[in-house]
Length: 154
View 1 (cartoon, rainbow, N blue to C red):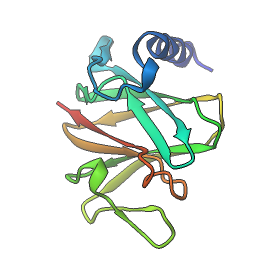
View 2: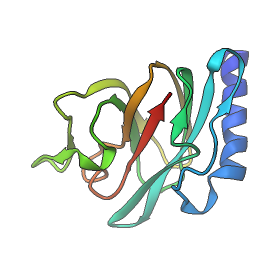
View 3: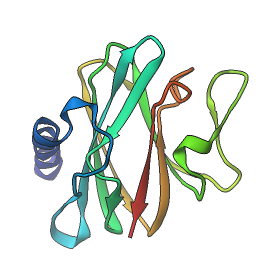
View 4: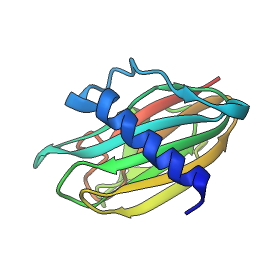
């Protein structure tokens, strides 16, 4: 792992310890910015019970440019992390007969991080343009149980 990636993971873990506890998805935390407009957003995913799941983000806004998502699975089930550029709110995707979210007509899927095992952390970095992004877990039933968040890039 490169030094930069190692630093991003370490910094993301620090954000999780101080900014993401308690299941608060209010988006009160600010994106941490570094050189060149780069931002880091800590994402915690998991389940509170058999029918309630969560995706909490340390910030609901980020500066345009490189954004690193540090995704930690706090739950007992496998999850995934998908990022879509879309005008549709993350909570307004349709749900298909397979109990998975249906991509809105204008959605552009930018990344899908699959197989995030319980207790593990994955990192992905994207170069984001200004606009609205929907973050979701699209494992069967997870989106419908609350695993989504919105991100505005300015």
